Amino acid sequence: MSIQELEQLHTPGIYQKRDLVIVRGKDATLWDDTGRSYIDCASNQGVNTLGYSNEAVVKAIADQAATLLSCSEIYYNDKRAQFMELLYTILPQQLNRIFLCSSGTEANEAALKFARLSTGRTDIIATVRAFHGRTMGSLSATYDPKYRDPFKPLVPGFSHVPYNNLEAMREAVNDQTAAIMVEPIQGEGGVHPGTIEYLQGLRQLADERGALLILDEVQSGFGRTGKWFALEHFGIVPDLLAMGKAIGGGVPMGAVGISKTVKNLAPGVHGTTFGGNPLAAAAGIASLQEMKRLDIPKLAAEKGQYFKERLEEINSPVIREVRGLGLMLGAELKTKTAPYIRGLQNEGVLAIPAGLNVLRFLPPAIITYEQMDIVIEKVAKVLAATN
Image 1 (tube, rainbow, N blue to C red):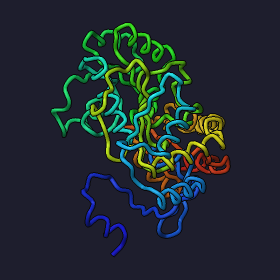
Image 2: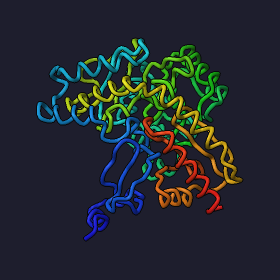
Image 3: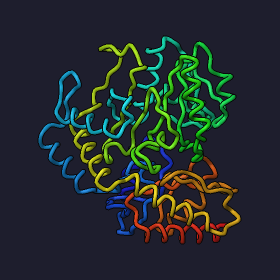
Image 4: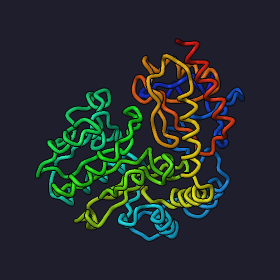
């Protein structure tokens, strides 16, 4: 029985699986069960900013696994404390409290609960094309009907207004609005960066109306956009910052940065069994240390500019626009991306969609210039062949 057949016996059927068995990874390269290599421009939806099998992260995980795997937050823990202090060194200094959890959607769930608890209000205003996760609260903030409709009724009090439209948000926010929730760069929704005027306007609007501002940087955080957090491009600090994906170097982890504007966080109002466990904390420490050592934001800025310029050089009538920041890039096509993603995989390049017609590129920041040149060559080839 093949690996695919064995897995298919037990899979619940909720994933659109590719006909590919990945068994090993190193840096920006993945290998399948036949030994064929692939340049990874997906990074597990943005998780592997450091690439695969980083030696420092691997050692930290192995050492901690032999010491202490799990420790509830009813106790203090050395690795948790060290990780929180290290994370704080790259956060805006106003976000001096940190809630640890196990994923990005859990971070968004916590941020939503904290916003309601802090303000005593119920309503959350999110945006068109937003993606904030799949658990019931974060799903209610997510926009795409294909994710939402099978699970209605969702959590009440959520609404959506057009992205990058400050006036629409101004009309929507009222005295029952607990929070404005937004991605500074929409990922799943098509790789749409916010404008400076829009995001700074949201900060001002939230302050004026007594609402909190939640920034979802689950995908855009930890250097991917050329800054530690995308918020730095826009000169704003949210009340609540949701983090995940790259935070643990590949180990499941999430976090919320919390400012002093968030009130009423008393013992027992929220919690998690695995959040802040020593294994994830040790991986997070090693990951952040490596990100600092390698200067991941600088690498992402420089390589992202190169990658974006090379994508823009591709002479294809299929491409409508290339956009993004750092190594969070999207090529919007005039047609659906599915055949091009299959074509790239056949050429040894892994990419993912962002909606129906955007090719999304989220390579590890340690991808080489030679690998980027190969990717561009393959993209041009596939676009020409499939057109």
